[in-house]
Image (cartoon, rainbow, N blue to C red; front, top):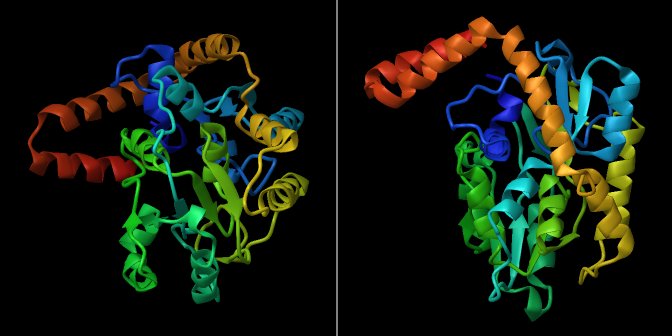
Length: 316
């Protein structure tokens, strides 16, 4: 029903946590990763019909509640809840380094970055960081950027389609094979890897992002929008540029506060169930359409499914 609570397998994780069937509609809204841009709500988040907003970042919770535009529920990151429930763990034979290639988005590109220098620096690291594998986002794969990255002579993998319910399982299966992970930006994966036990470090110059067409944010070179974004960026750079990466109490606290690891899952689960019941009453027509489309996807021929997909895209 709403993409932020379905992307990156979030819908699967929420349903698993709430004991809902896979086809159950989720008329909720929330973050879909670690929000590094703003402490406030984006335009699409403000305009969304659900009155409830889900987030895990302790600092963002305080900012959004002060803003007062939505009922904010502070939860533990759904991936963490899912992976702990299902016992997903680091493999004993984990070795080498997984390189998260800083990715573009729809309408957002990385400009003027010296990738040759970046990969030369990585390859010069001591033997304990080898072998190295590059992990690329589906946006970059679809744009064909992997064809250029091949020249660096490292294997390339991906967790695949971000709308797949299996994305979370694929992601943890990938990182479970590595002792270290790295990038030159430190995205959401920094927090996922650290919580999981894969030691993460930031290396190289921060890439410069340029927004060409995303209407939700200011056009041009992207900069931290407020104190929340500046705090996240500065803290990441201060804590995670050490190589080899060492664990510290400050790192543990920073990751915990960002992913909501100290939140009581049962309390937040009860709050989510209450909000879900309330939103079901506010979304009767949307729920009927959603159930109909789900039925079509499950039981009707492929040709008809393409028409259903087009209809669904036109609705949004």
